[in-house]
Image (cartoon, rainbow, N blue to C red; front, side, top):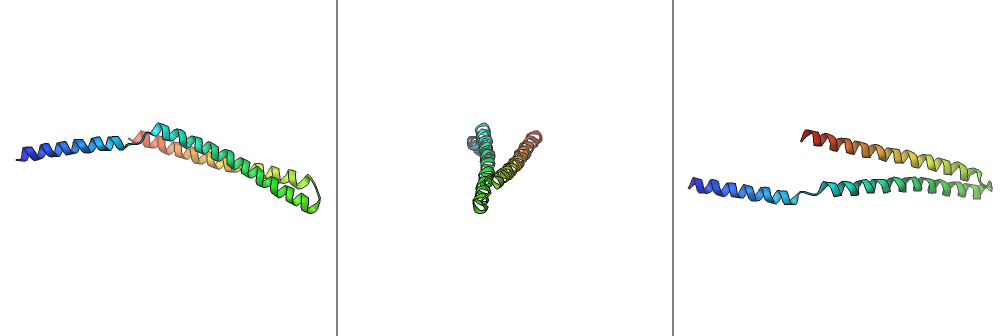
Amino acid sequence: MTDQKSDELEDLGDRIATARGKQLPEPAKKEHHTMANMAWRMVIELVAGISIGFGIGYGLDWLFGTMPIFLILFIGLGLAAGVRTMMRTAQEVQKMNMAQATEGEES
């Protein structure tokens, strides 16, 4: 009777292990999409910074009648803000990669 129960438990353990193996995601494809998303995020942040700077500069130049002064100034500030935001995103990616590397070493 106990041999039958132990055989059933071993069979159940094997089926559970097989089911868990089927549910594991494929990390290589997920990693590729994550990096592509981060790259697009960085591009959008840069373009958004420049666009916002352009809008503010053009608006102020139109309001005060001083055509390219504020436009050039705020495009430069928008570029600087976009690059700063991109650098912050790059640091997030680096931290994420370092965390994954340390997880891989611990396993």
